[in-house]
Image (cartoon, rainbow, N blue to C red; front, side):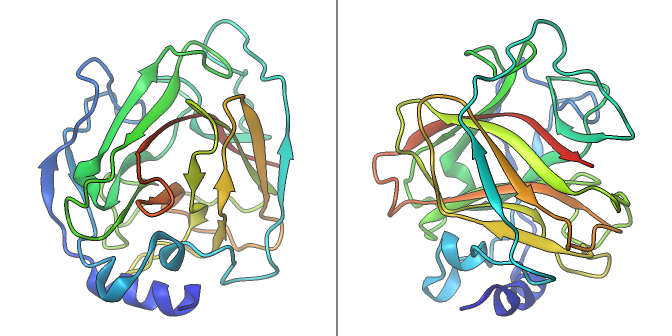
Length: 259
């Protein structure tokens, strides 16, 4: 199934389900200053054998195929709250825990959402600044889908039914640093945009699969041909149980849009 067909299904199949997020009790949501204890997942996704790859294909529904480039590093590893915020050149999704420059909230838990644990204040070798975002995925098929993922949304829990989002026109790329705890962790796709609904994203870019290494690498997605005039789904990832049968832990840092 191609991404356009999948996104049509996305609009009709999601059903909000609240749950206690398995999030570090000391880790507060950096976008709104309080712990994101209630999250919503589009429970309808994953039906009819749909996999994580079906949800986020290595494709773009608008414009040319985005280009993924990878920088081997080394990461900045500067002290303090990450790279200096320049609103004209960078628009951050995540820099550091409670970073005043952060936007969007990792509230859109999808698929087997009970198989995910996150810590937005991990101090385990951040790429830059004092913290990074840690994800642990233990594929227990808790909802029966065989995949899981998270969307960073604006506002919280926005699956296209709330006004919000940002006009990011002029931004040319989405960059982020990522690494696996052991290496060979398989991410089905990373995404920018793609949420449907009444107040849907204006564009979408999906890339993957990506095989992580145990060393930090910076990933860059070309968004120069993507309509970014209304972005409510700032960033997302999805991973499948099939590709990670023993589970995995990975880290993300310095997620930002750049000119």
